[in-house]
Image 1 (cartoon, rainbow, N blue to C red):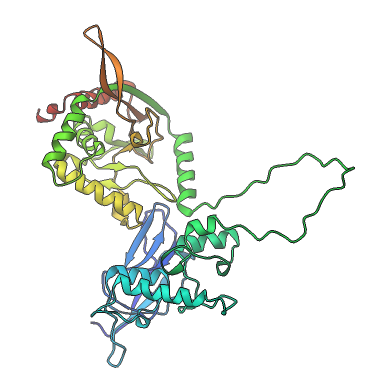
Image 2 (image 1 turned 60 degrees about the horizontal axis):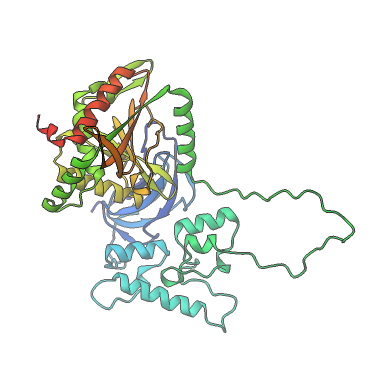
Length: 433
């Protein structure tokens, strides 16, 4: 343990990043933190990233609060070394510490049943606090022991954007915490008197009221970037129906032999990686008026999150086994949906796959991802009647759509890539060759 304080700064998470927005602190000021422990969540122009503590000690001098937009390299707080005579750190499970941080609860107030504070101890404390706060003989509603109404960070942000006072909401979350749904379902109290129009007067044309929906930083950036890509990159599309019989059989067989949950997306990642290795031009990019070819097959996977869309990257997919692909895919998707992606998870992609088959979509065309030259859009696998040897038969079919940047890939090269991918889907044993 060092003897000097360590600054916690707003990190640079992207090449063009100038600021970051603090989503929430995972530790409260005065709490003990360990080096490498998640400290706060920051929203950038790419996604929400979890920032780790740079040192062990006591979190102090927090200068930025949730929702603040802070320039990079700005000092957000300091980690003070633990000195003799200071209160001993509270032992708590990671889940208990996270819930306490979300509700701005000082863990020293919680008396654990065992040797350390567990999730059940925190929830029980919050429930007791909520019952005390909602007692009928205590109006108006008393303050939460932490000094703030318990609410999730997104609910707190949404309420602020809509001008809703949290003290007027009854939360449905753990310990009565206000959730996003509670804010969305809130209705103002009806006024005592409703104005009426004289019966002899004809009212003017009524214009429907329009509600401005809140848009996160991620949503705004996503809108700006897709608009820029769509309007500046010359897209063209190639579509092809493929027989997915062998793909279905492969997944069934792989699932029986694998300890991981194998999805069709995992199989497509494996097959697309093989096709990209054979057609390197498709994994090139256009930059500053020239072509740049990456030697790596790094495939981005479009993942829908609450605030928009993120594309975490699986690296060197052509060198991974199917089990390794399934494990890597599950890991990045889970971290994307829980806001725990690291900066390196969002960079270096050379191709992207977006799959809407699970939503019943048959076919769609995707907008290119940044400077990448191609993106594969995948629809659902559905039984269709198709001709086989002049006879109508039913087969599981799927439609592939690949969007290309015409500056990088011409029609012939794009068609050759799609043919290779289609052949591999219809006969995955082609991987052996």
